[in-house]
Amino acid sequence: MPGQNNNGIISRNFILGFVANFLFFGTNFYLVPVLPLHLDGLGGTRAQIGLVIGAFSLTAIFLRPVVGRISDIIKKKWLMALGALIFIAAPPLYAATESIYILAIVRIFHGVGIASFAAASAALVPEIVPLEKLGQATGLYVTSVSIATGLAPLLGSHMSATTDFAVQMTVPSIASLLALVMVLLIKEPAPRNAGNTTPFFEVLKSPHVMVPTLIFTACSFSLGTITAFLPLYTISWGYNNSGIFFSVFSATLIGMRFLAGGLPDRFSKTRVIFPSLLLLSFALALLSAVRTPLTLALNAALYGIGYALAYPSLNAWVVEHSPVAGRGLAMGVFSASVDAGAFLGPVFMGIICQYLGFSTGFLLSALIPLLALCLFKTTIAGDDLRVTQACQAQSENEAATKPPAF
Image: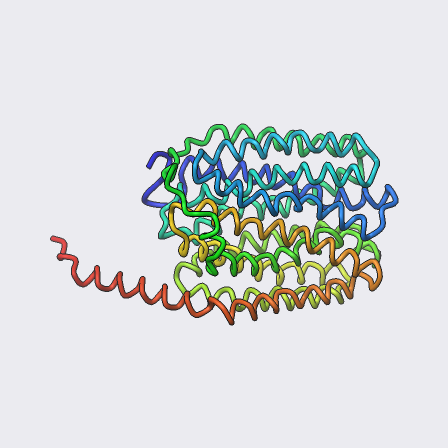
């Protein structure tokens, strides 16, 4: 297959996709400390801030599955390019208005870009890496997002403190333009499944697609809450650099994906998913009591461990249980979990924080991963053990019947 390194994960296409992912998602995380403070300066309430931040994900929730289906038919790089073009156009539109409601509309338009790029990018990975290393490859690939998570908010905080909003909005447009260049350089294999796709509702009916999607919605619900309200939460106790959380969170994700990225491939994914959800819940509960930069950093590390374990395990679960002809759609549905949580978290927790405060909001959000854990336990948790055991038995049979090498 062109562009794929059959002996390992790293290839030209992988590197280009990695860099494009870093630049693209960097523009998104750059806005994390910038937009809430800008909206607060415009006089927005906590509920309005949550609505505007969450509106970004509203369109993407519904579009990612559609993009996933399209990516089963056409080259994924064109969908990634469309997303990058929208990300180039959206930041100047933010700077052109001071209306909270028009900003919400711009956020919805911006969300079309994330839907187009992210779903196609996720579906690209199984095409350019060996499938037996998919869990590790996915963890390594999304490390690009982890690096962006750590660096971009720091840049955003610096720009927010030193420049006006119009200047701040030039940075994400330039980064998105560079991402577009990287995408166009990808030499993607021709679509393998054109005219031979799995029916849409057959994919939606699969518990091995929908349950992991709901579980990761719970994970991204918590991250969406943190993204929307942590900058204002830290200011409420006298600390103005919430970027430290995202930097430590990012460093933890990167470290975990290099040190433990192969765990989903070597062990039952169930044994990885269970502790990851428990860690996320515990970290969110602790976040409600954080009042110093040191405890904020420690909390970010704990939260990062849980998040780093959850995503590649759930992602690989969906890929392994999806037919090749429906893999793009399945990945589109699964990746919509990021947007669903990123929308629901700020909107619902914005209302709670408006009336009960930030600490109560974070404490209540700790219940969401626990509910996801209960869902996993009562539905598909046992299936992974059977898949793992079947694969091991098949490998042993193949080894036993393979003629000796001379």
